[in-house]
Length: 99
Image 1 (cartoon, rainbow, N blue to C red):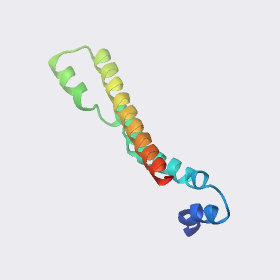
Image 2 (cartoon, one colour):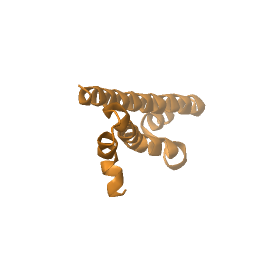
Image 3 (tube, rainbow, N blue to C red):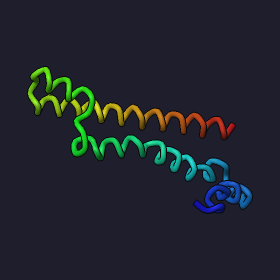
Image 4 (tube, helix red, strand yellow):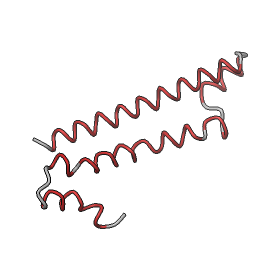
């Protein structure tokens, strides 16, 4: 990332853009970067390993299809909680910066 990227919001404000518009790109990038670990977890979930709860359920004797459906639901719940946390943090930071 170039020096221009880190100072672009300051340049926009100096050019007369409102602060809300100037930091919009920074907030979007922050949310995108904070979600990368969860996206990577989902990408490798079924191919590389059978995660957490699914192994225990299969060992105990549960149906493998229902076990994997349950695991996919758990992984998407984790993804959605991560997204909402990132979004809420960015929103609160965004609104406090505009006071």
